Each structure stands twice: as C-alpha cells, then as structure tokens.
Length: 467
Image (cartoon, rainbow, N blue to C red; front, side):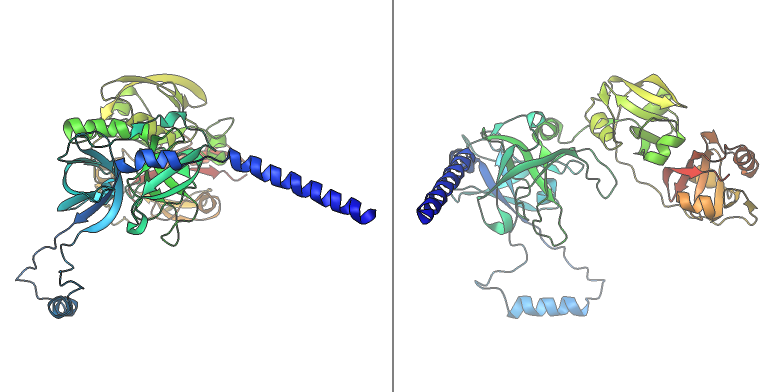
C-alpha cells in the first residue's frame, strides 16, 4: 500500500509539473508570423572602400612591399583582388516603398560604394542621402519601386520587461533572428567627444557585429528601435545591447531626408553629475540635477543668465534627475524655441527662460603653458600660484589660480597639481589674494564646492574643510 501511495503521489506531482510547463510554454510569444511579415523589409548592407593611391614621393615600407607581393602572386580564391571588394558590415530596413533605407552611420561611413542585398538575393547600389554621427544614423536610397516596408511604433510606449526581437546579419549570416526583453530605457552612452544625445534602449537581445542598423521589433511587429551598439570585453555579445529609440531616430531621419543634416538644440553649458558630497556642498536635500561647471561665452545659457554653480533640475517641463538626461531634452528641442528651466542657485529654486540655439561642431584646443615661480600654501592642503600670462584668454576664464601641490583634504577631494581653480564655495577666484581670503573664511567641518579646470574640462569637486 505504501508503494502504491508513493507512486500515486509521484504521478500527481509529475502531472502538475507537466501542466505547469505547458502553461508556461503557451505564455511564451510566437515570433514566426512577425518574422514572416517583416523579413523582406530587412536588408544586408555591404560597402566598398577603395584604397588611396600611394604617394610616389613617399618610400614604401617593407610591409607594403610584402603586401604588394602577395597581391600579385597569391590572390584570393577566384583571382579577385582583396582591395575594393564589398564587405558585409551591417543591416538596415526599408522605410519607404521608393527605396529609402535606414541604417547606422558607422556602417556606411567612409564608403565609396554602398551595396544593399534583399532577402530574395537582389542586390542594388545605394546612394547616401545624409548621415548623423552624433546619433549614429544614416539614410540611404536605392532606385526601386514598391519595396516592402516596416511599420513604425512608439519607443516612448516601450516598457521594461517587454519582449522585443531583432532581425539582422550578425557576422554576415543574413536574416538571423534573436529575441529578448527590454532591460532598461534612457541609457546614456557618451561618444569619444563626450557627447550624449541618444537615450538608448538597453536589451538582452543577442546582437553581434553585423546587426548594426537592423530593426528592433515589438510583439506587434512595429519597429521600436535601431540596433546600434553592444557592451562587450570580447567583441561578441555578453548580454547587454543598445538600440536607438525609433522616436529619436525618426526625428533625425526626417531632417536627413529634407536637408541632409540634423539640427539640434544647444544650450551652451558644460555639465556634470551631482554626487552626494556635491549635493551637500550646494545645500540640496538629495543628489539630482545637472551641475553647470561652465557657461559658454555668448551662448543661449549666458544670455539667459545661467551661472557656473547653477543646478538645472527641470528643463521645458521635464525633470532632470541625472545630468545625462539634459542633453537628450535640449538636443530634441527645436532651435529658436523659448524654454523655461528651473535651476537651484545658492539653495533657492529660480526659473530662467532660454532661447535655444543650434548645436554646431566645435573643437577644443589643447592648452599648454609654463607657470611662473612662487607658491602660496593654504590650510586646505593646497599650494597655489597665479595664472601665467595669456592663460586667461586660452582657458576662457576671467581669473583663477593654478595648483602647485595638493595634499590632505585637497587630494582627498580629487584636486591635482596643474588644476586651475576658478571658483571656491560659489565665489569667483580672481587671483592668489582672493583665493586666500575666501579659503580663510570657509566654514569648518563642511563640504564646499570648488570649480577646477583640468586640461580644458571644467569640473566641480566637493572639498571638505578641515576643523
């Protein structure tokens, strides 16, 4: 009887487990119809980049001579030259029936020829309509009619945890399908120029080289993002991938189609994150907002009365919790629009109105100068000196002091030798004398903000005054 009872219980639990598994399987999405409906609108993109003709005035290196030898006597299979051959670099999708296709800028950047291959193996040459490196988007066009297109969704409606699917050509394997969920929204990924104008969608969809520029679909078969980047130490997928929200992308694509370029709003400030120490030093109840460390001369911010040390907590009705959120909002604001922003200044919230300018390409100059002799120590662990001749003009400041040595509290705050201090406890530093007067009057046992310029980047640090 006991063995029979045990068998009955085992059968019962096994049945429950199977039923549970069947229920879970029914809850998982079926992507087959989505793929069948949209695969024809996804394309593989290859490019040709012809090598520059070698200069007759420059002697060839040994490596170049060896390469020439192998090109002549050991061509690849089929006898074709490896130079000028198309390389499969990414993916894209057809936006309009008459041949407009969206992809990533880095897929077609520098290409002499762009080739588009469809899922029926048709291959067409494409022309570049326009590109935008800041958002990593490009619009290309092929001469065709009645092409299959995708349906666009709303990335703003995406929810974390929602299922999404990618179609692309990872490693050249055309029309590979991978699926996952939305891991997060509004991720900030600064570029090499430390710019950040795209609030990326983070997913765990398997994305690899070749998926770039391909569409990210929701379960309704709508494109909600454009696959752009992965986070990886190996170069392959490691569970974290990023897509450009389709709402952001279409704003750029519309401008590329109309003018060939993308116009963005510009405020004219350098900002940084507000950490706990800085929040305390500026009298905030918690870390939030974008701390202004520099206001560009004659910029919209300067004309609106923004000051160094202001903390922007709201822009055009959008709360700014992290500093990385501000470029997204400002960049998406039309040029010429008057926008209200809330800033915290010396512990009080005020409203400023700024006329948004247009963001333009700007290059920073490298600063290098010799400093004069002499140094004045302070109780903060700092030894400072006056600025060298012409340094104010090169730095774009009205005054300040240069750090000779930093020890104790100053070193703990992150101040280094060579830094230029322009503000201390929200007071402007004119010269060494003004620095010493302000330093002597600082409240003991509290953190105070100090604005430094390192290289040519202004940064606020929180310096705790010793007792």
